[in-house]
Image (cartoon, rainbow, N blue to C red; front, side, top):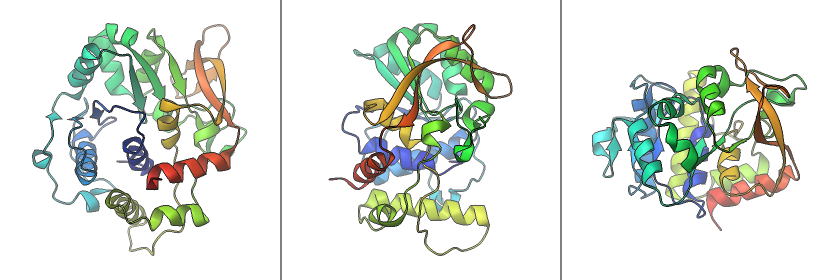
Length: 287
């Protein structure tokens, strides 16, 4: 609900048959507003079988997708809405017969709170996130960046790093260079599927809220960071993966730390970036 790539990632998730989606929880502040986006998109996708959880920092202030949310209320959602999304998360992991994959595409106060309440969940789950900057920063810079999802709540990611579970990350090295342009974007933009049309309406609302004026239709996407975390939830085929000892600093960096770092599987480079873009388009539009 802050950057539009969350919504792209949600649509990709819904179109990925590898997943049995048990719960989607809003996170990182203003969590009622964010939950409304999730719920309305799920209703559009006819996936109201998926429960929605409100994160631990509830708020319902306007955001850049408010024009699309309109007067939608969580009370309107035909499925289940959990007011305590963290409790629902803990319950979902504990009740699962199989290990759970947690896909985290924002700052992680919910996950830190869940680990505080129920440390045992770490033995029943793995963490896949869009976090950090290992060798490359924003804009493919050779200087690393305090990536937003880390910088916004470094103590929360530190708690995640202390937990005894497998961690896989897409840092800016791989997720910070994902854009759809030209024919690839056009295929998505002109797809008649109602969920894609809702995604494009969200994108336009987000763009116009950012510029504070009416804008012509887009001809490219913004940076689609979060889609790579969804991808890593079901395959690593197109990524060059390395296990790197990382520490989370108080000022929001993920630094290589051979002495004190914890091992993290990181997608550091693309084997074929164009192939990932093609895969993303097909995931979004189907076929």
